[in-house]
Amino acid sequence: MAFQRKIQGEAALKTIFVDDRPTARRLRKSQLVVLEGPEQGQALTIATEEVLVGRSAICDLTLTDASVSSRHFKIIAVDRGYILQDLGSTNGTFYGDIKIKEIYLRPGTVFRAGNTVLKFQPTDEVVTIELSERDRFEQVIGASIPMRAIFAHLERVAPSDLTVLLEGDTGTGKELIAQAIHQRSARAKKPMVVLDCSAIPKDLIESTLFGHEKGAFTGAIAQHKGVFEQADGGTIFLDEIGELDLSLQPKLLRVLENRELKRVGADRTQGVDVRVIAATNRDLRQMVTEGRFREDLYFRLSVMLITLPPLAARRADIPLLAEHFVKRANEQRAKRELPPLKLSPEASSYLKERPWPGNIRELKNAVDRATSLCEGVLITRQDLLFGQQPLRGVLPQPTLEQAPTPTAYALRFEVEIETTFKDAKQALLDEFEALYLKRLLEAHDGNISQSAKIAGLTRYHLRELLKKHAMHTRSGDGG
Image (cartoon, rainbow, N blue to C red):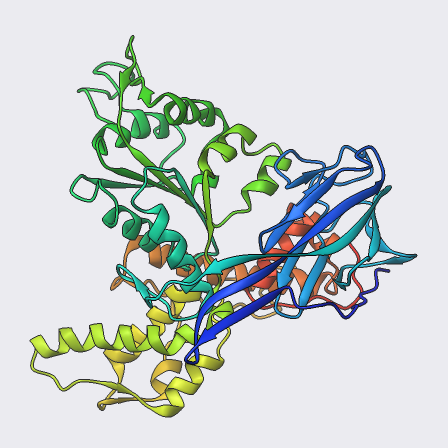
């Protein structure tokens, strides 16, 4: 059994205020020194809010010790101190004789990952993380510290031609960020082409990306320009890049490195001038470890890596976002000469209390539904609750006697046609995930290892899904 032990640490992040408004954050630099192991004597300077350590080359500190997992642990800087978090490693992370999941580090803490012994030591140096003076970046809204830190980063990155990788849970606004980057760039007057890599059949993805010549394959009745050519001079946004088939990843890498492509069926290459922004809700570094995503492509895409926080980590933005969605609804109501709507205090409180596993997309859907269905001009908590447990008459819920097996279930749903196909599909997938995970944990008494094995997932991936849906496992599951 693994135990969790917290050690009181020193502040790693400090927020600087001017007239009660946060203006910057100061990160105290630290060092991670290898005391015993193949890398003995090596040291990693920690100058970012999170570092990853393991055997994989994608880690910030790579350890060649065979007893160390590919992604063994990470260290996170938070207001209260530095957190050491084991990532479900095979041989564990130990503080003394105690196998730990997560602890606060203090100066001089010595711990072991596999057979490698490391020491954590803060330094006297400080890194300043600037916060944007603004509460929005183009159409992206956020007054919270995490979002203003991202805005400050985007203000510098957007005007450049650097390749950007956006990471974050489903519904955190990655496409909106990509659009904002394009709008702030010198390419703003040129096209921005969006490709959802998860929505293209495997046999069409190469043609969709790079185009094809007439007669290149059955059905190719005319020459076709792929999305890279369509975006020439502008920006291409590759959404769900983690879904790109492994066999096509080398071809995408060549386009990124050489800025030239070859249409399917063509005998020569041609130059293309595009800026690439990619996005994923998957853990690409874990996929690299598992051999499902190319390491060199990951590094080429993540020249600038921006991680978007879940809505639960930026609760200060919930009222701001809700009011924004109500304002947009009122603009449409004004065209029909309808009175404006307003959120009631109880409705605002409800919005701030909810976990929002679907993030901004889920919040937007809830507010949009309420603005369409409320009977007065004041949006109540009940208006927001309407539709959370929809009437689902498509499939009857089976009784235990009707169920073919003890673990069988039926997913019943209504299709939202007042939203985009992508959002409607994602809403259904989110509902499926939550129901599947609930039944999976129930069937295995909350045991992570058993559940992951049955589901065909890694323990880390399963834990991330459970976090997304605010689900908890039994205490002490060391899987």
